[in-house]
Every structure is written in structure tokens, then in C-alpha cells.
Length: 284
Length: 351
Image (cartoon, one colour):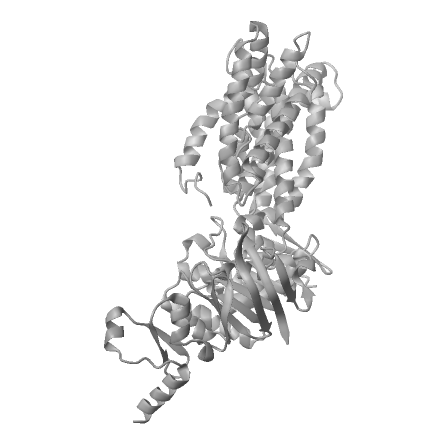
């Protein structure tokens, strides 16, 4: 089932075109990662999807309805956004922060329902923040803080989650924690669109990779089909080898310095070739 | 529909009835109750203290309808004390709203040039009037609104977090002050001393004529301020997060700004500049009440209390003369500002 449909999206920032002809489908339970070099329009695309940036043209449909015809509250019940680099007001506790995620489900006469309780507990369990409930946000480490913000977004209980670089400030262990958590959400039927800097993480955890350059989508599909040395050269302007990760065979990008390029006679050009080469090695 | 009360962490109580539910936070509730009691105490004290000191029993006599002291209390002291209460509440609320909206503790009506706008129009009205008197009550508030309007035009709207608005406001305030002083220097001594008396923020002689517009304004604007409260707490997290949580960001920003400006404009325009209240009341109230949302009721009560006490101090400090409440506020405001800027968790920084 398609949850989010984007057709021929165009957007600009201060009269400068930023996005051109973007097409994207997100199905229920799918993780879509948007990758690309700095300034390629990833964040603007995410802001368009979150209804924070009004596009110049094209169409975005959320659950079948045009995004801009929905009321703010209806949108808040269908999608949640985790922006980059957030700072919480001083003195606020983790539980209070996560509770804010319930805002669209509340009103003057419905300030805290049993459903709110359950949603907050689920979100905090999922992000492993339950034991931090009474702690103040400003006393936590960066990784813990990021998980708390993620819990707030999860508590909103929307079918679609939009995450802008949720792992950028985390060490490797916490990165993996957050990404594993995202996989579990997808397994539970939620859709996730995530902007990632880290191509290796994106290739490993996403079902669909959307590669952007200069405001256009230049490749879209399963990571294994999309990530090739030719693509890396095209997008980032560097030479790189693409290896298959042990275990699941997800493509791993290894940038080659000038010396490495000189030493290496031939770099296998497609993941399929590479995969074959590796299988051969393993059999030997 | 659980019957037993549920306690969320950090002393937040959930009240349930049928499908309805309300949250009740203990600490802000206690602080608000204490401040209400404090305000009442300050009002009673202000009624009794002055050139003629009365005993507390007199209040009881007046309440019972004894006429011997009621003229002094009801006709002279009560209106003035009530003006102080309402002006203080309006200023504190305005400060609380502006501080929350901009995420900057230094955002106050003085800083944004509202006070200087009011001074300017008061001065113009004084110069234009043939008999050399102040204009009608709305001249001051109008000046504050005009100053805000020009501020918004120059800074190009509220902006993401109002930082630009603050900086433009500081510049605008300087410009308006210079204009007022230029005009003042060309006036006769009589005009100049009248306007100077106004700029010291004195409540002397303020009575029902000042109280009515001020109280009516507060009655309309206080509910508006409370309406924005929940949304403002979300805006404080992050503008984008608030928007995706369903907060109509622009509408809330404008409503908050207009409410704050009207409150501050009314208070400053009618009573003259009472510095420090709009800055201090929200900071102190928030520190006492804790929590993430600005405790607006506590903030308003504290503001009222501060102005009543400032006015009271002004009346009794010197044996034969009165110090204007605005001067007392300024005396307290300087050290307080330093404490805010240099103190623990220095509040001058952006949150």
C-alpha cells in the first residue's frame, strides 16, 4: 500500500530552484533513505514532505489526500518530523519532552487519556529511554538526548516518520541503536523517510535509496542495485570501491585515496560483479 | 475511565472524568496560590501605609461599611493600588509572552522601544494641545502600538525566533528616545517637567480614569494569553517540531505578539515606564514554578505584587516627598539585570 506519493515535485528557496522533478513512492513499512552531497536538496525535500516548505509545483499525496489540503492537525496525526540538531528548553524532563509528542491527540478537555500513557510508554520502551523518564534533558549525553527526541516523535504515533540526520551527532554504537530502532518500527508497519549523510548506514538499513544531486534524483532503488563506483564518482566526485558487507551483502563504500587508485589496477564496476568476485574468494 | 487519580512524574496529576481528562501540575499551582496570597497581602499593606498609617482593623471596618476611614481608603488609596496591580500584571504578562516567543530572557517592552514610542506620542500630544495638557488616555498605548508596527515593518515580521526583531527594537528604541529628547529640549520648562514627570513612571494621582481602560484591556487580553500558552510551550521546543505537531505557528506568533504589545502598551502608555517588572516577573516566576511552559498566572500575580510594593516603597522611603514607582523599579532593575546576565545558567544566552 502506498502511503506517500510524490509526483514531479519542484521547489525553490529564495527564487533559486532547489528541487526539480522529484518522484517518490513510500509504501507502508518501508524505510527510504535520502542521500547525496551537501546542498543537494535533501533537507528541502524532507521539509516539503513535512509540509514546512511550500513547493512550486508537482503533487504530494499523503494517504491519498493532497498534503496541502489537510489541516495542520490532520497532518500531525499522519506524519512526524525529527529535525536536525535540536536543543530542548532548560530544565525540562525526559518524560515531559516525550509527552509533547501527544499534542495532536489532545485538546482542552482531553489533556491526558490512557492512550497517551500507552503511547508514551511504548515510545520510551522502543528507544530504551524509560529509565531516563525523570532525568533532565540537559543532563544527558548526546546519544541519550537524541533517543529522547526520537521517543517524542514516536509518541506521536503517526504512520509516517520523517527523520533528518538522526545519527549525525552520535557515536557508532548509538548510531546502530537508532538505526536498529528504525528497522523495528518499519517491521511494525510504519514508514520512515530518513535523510542520512552516511552512505554505508543508508545502504545497510534502507529498503530504498534515493540518491540526489543538484536538486534531482539521479538513482532510486534497492541499495544493492543503486550503489556502484560509477554512482559514487558521479555524485561525490571521488573514486571508491564498493564491497559487499559480510553477512547480508549490503554494499559498503570504500573511498580510494590517490595512492590506492594507483595501486589498484581494476575496480569491479557493479555490485553484482563484486559479489561474484567475493563469493569466488570465499569458496576458495 | 479509571477512578483513582494517576500521578505522572514530576508532580503532575491527571484528573479524569468520563472521557475527559485534565493535567494539574502541583508546583505551579502552589506557587500561584502563594503569589495570590502575597499579592493580597501587598495590597492590604499598601492600603494601610502612607502619609497617614492605619491599623489593619480599619480595613475590616471599611469592609463592614464604616464610613470614617472609607474616604481615604476607597477614594484615594484603593484606585491607585489597583492601578499598580493591573499595570504590573499587564507588564509581567507582556514580558512573559515576549520572552517565551523570542526564546530570549532580555526581550522586554523597554528593549523593543514600546516605552519610547509611548513617550513620543505623549510628547506630541502635549505639544499640540493648546492648554498644555496630556491628551486622552489612549495616546500612550497608541504610541506603543505605532512603535511596534514600525518595528515589525523594519525587521520584516516576527522571524524564526524573533532575534532580528530584538536587535531592530534596540535600535528603534534609541532613535525614538533621541527624537523625544530633541523635542523635549525645545519645550518650555513647564512642558518639559510635565513630560519628565511622566517618564519617571509615577502612579501619583492615578485613579479610576486610568484603572478602567487598563482593567478592561487585561480582561480581554489575559484569556488570549492563556489561549496561546500550550502552543507557546511547543514553539519553545522548536518551530519545525511545533508545526509538525499541528501548531499553526504563524497565527500563534502573531496572536502572542499582538497580545503582548497591547498589554505592555496599555500599561506603559497609562502609567509611564515601569522598567524591570516585565523582565523580572517572568524569570522569577519561572524559576519558582519550574516546568517547561511559562507559568503565566504566577507571572502576572508576581508582576502585580512587584509594582504595588515599588509604589509603596516610593511613598514611604522619603519623609516629605514621593519617589515614583518607575524610579524604584529602575533602582532594583539594574542589579537584577546584572544577576540575570551573569548568574547561574546565564539567562542572556538563547535557550
